[in-house]
Length: 297
Ligand code: GUN
Image (tube, rainbow, N blue to C red):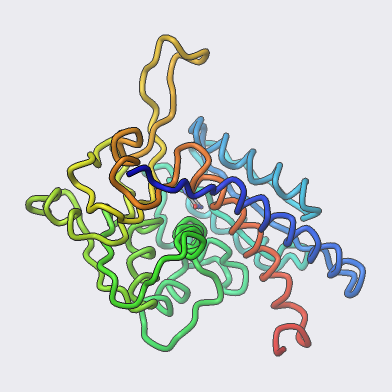
C-alpha cells in the first residue's frame, strides 16, 4: 500500500491566498492593515531564518510587519519594555516572540506580558489555559498544531473516537496538538522520552503526530496500516551529495512509512508551510478583533 500524500504546501498556499484577499478587503473597507511585530533575541541562525520567512510572508500578503532584533545579551527589562511598547502600538495586531530565548531570560514572564488580543502564537497563559479547558475558546490557537489539525481535516480524518498518538510534549507543538485532538473527541496518548515500548503505543494510532525532533525515528513497523501520519519534525542530516552538505528529514522514516500509512505529510512541504500560513491567519484575526462589528458577527 502506498500512502496518499498530504500536500501542506498546497493547503498553505490556498490559506495564504484567502488571507491576502481578506487583508485587502479590510484595508479597503475599514482602512485597517493587519500588522505583525516579531521580537528576536540573539544570533540563532535557525531563528533568524524563521523570522525572515515570516516577514517575507507578511510582505507577500499585504500585512505590515515590524522587525525587532535584540542582541544576545539583552536584559529581561529590555525585552519586556519592547513587548509593552508593541502592546500599545495600534499598528501592531500580532506580537511574536521567537523561541527559544537565550537562557538568561525568563520566557514565561515575557510571554505573560504579551497582550492576549495580540498573542498570535497562542503561547500566553490565558490562550493556553482556554485551550486546555472544556467549553472555552482561545482567541488564538498555536500555529503549528493548528496547521496539523487543518492537514488532518484535509486528509478526511474522522476524529471522533479515533486513537491519536502524539510523540512529544513540547509547549509549542506536542502539548497543544494533544489538546486540540482531545477537543475533537479523539482518544489521545502523549508519548515522551520515558514512554515504555514506544513502537507498540504508536502502532495503536489511527492518527500519529510526530513532533520529537529526532531524524527518522518513526519506522514502518511503528505504524498501523492505513494510519494518518503527520510529521512535524525538521531535522538536518549530513549529506555530502547535497549542495548545502545536508538535507532535511522529518521525525518519520518517510520512504518506508509511506508503504504502510494511509496518508502522510512529506518533509519539507508538509507541516512547515502551514505554520506560517496559520500565523498570517492569526494576525488577520488580531486585526479583526479591533473591529467591533466584525468581532461580534
Ligand atoms: N520557535 C519554533 N517554533 C516557533 C513558533 O511557532 N513560534 C515562536 N514564537 N517560536 C518558535
